[in-house]
Length: 255
Ligand code: NAI
Image (cartoon, rainbow, N blue to C red; front, side, top):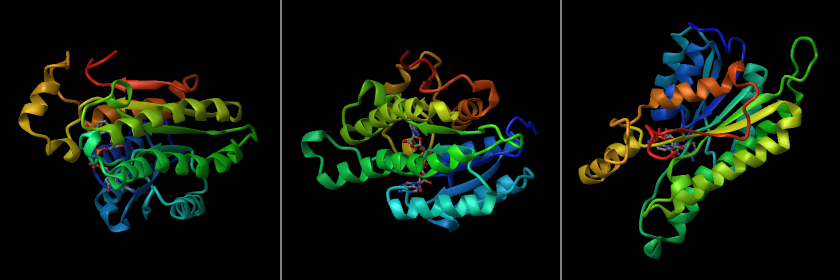
C-alpha cells in the first residue's frame, strides 16, 4: 500500500459501484479511510468490504445527494464517525437523455438536482468543517474537494441538454469554490472523464459507441481506474499547488 493519504478521511458519493467505487478503492489503497455514500446504505456493502480488506476504516452511508437535510446529516455523521472530512469527492451522477425539444421538466430537474445541486450541497456542507481542520501543529490543514464533471460539460452533446448543463455547471462551481475557499487551504478541482466503460455507458447502442471510439486518439475507452488515478493525484500532497482546474481524462478526445 502507498501511504500518501494515510490518516486522511475521504467521503465519496455514488460509491456503491462504477467510477465512485473505483475512486474509493484507490484512495483506500493510498491509505485513506473512506466514507462510502450512495442512495441506499446496503448498496455500499461490497465497496466497504473491499476497502476494509485494504486495511483502512470504511463505513456506508445512505444519502440522496439532492436533498439538503440528508446531505447535512450525512456530513455530520461522517465527521462524528471519522473525526474529519479531508477529501470530498462529488461523484454521484445520473443521466436522463433525450432531445431538448422533447425533454420533460422532470427529466431536466432530476439530472440538475443530482449532478449539480448535489455537488453544491456537499461542497457547502463540508466547507465549514474543512475550514476548521487543523494539523497536529495547529496550522490550517484545510481539505480537498474533487468534483466529477464530464467531457460533454465542456463540448456539449446532442441528446443530453440536462446532463451537459449539469456538468458545465459543475465545472463553473469548481472554479468558484476554488476562489472562495483557497485562502483557507481548501483546494477544489474537477476531473472531466471522457467515455468510460461503466453501467452508465454499457447501455448505449453499438453504433453510438463506435462513433465515440472514432474520436479517441488513444483508441480505447477509459476505465474507472483511469479516473480514480487522477482523483488520487488531485487528493495527494503532490497536487498541493493545483486548484480551480479541470483535469481531462479522455484519451485525447478533446484538448
Ligand atoms: P454509475 O451509474 O455506475 O454510478 C453512479 C452512482 O451514483 C450509483 O451508485 C448511484 O446509485 C449513485 N447515485 C445516483 N443518484 C444518486 C443520488 N441522488 N444520491 C446518491 N447517490 C446517487 O455511473 P458512473 O459511470 O460510475 O458515473 C460516476 C460519475 O462519473 C457520474 O457523475 C457521471 O456523470 C460521471 N461520468 C461518467 C462517465 C462515463 O462514461 N461513465 C463519463 C463522464 C462522467
